View: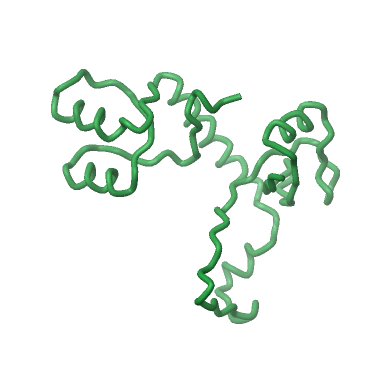
Length: 159
């Protein structure tokens, strides 16, 4: 099962459980998804934080709601504001548009970027994967790189 954070057009956030990513897209296309708060059928995936389990030997101190920062209290478990939803949608659209003219280079990203920086190959828009160590090394060398705001699946992994 896959759990997605979902959001409706009105900004309500909720969870959805699906057998696969294809199930989500299929149900969405058939109009089977609806917001439990308002019934809106315009539902999309909301940005999610990765589920990283805590180490077994560590304890996290949980602060009671009244002691948290006011901005944290205001956003915890509340619907995503429509302005934020629109901004994220615009950012995702801009990234998708930029990637249309970019070439996927996979795990050769650091190598190919470095070649362009040092004039060993023609400059062209590329995207791919780099480890954190590779990205830091590129930045230290002065090679202009930036992470993409939304994950990108390799072409061979697309449905």
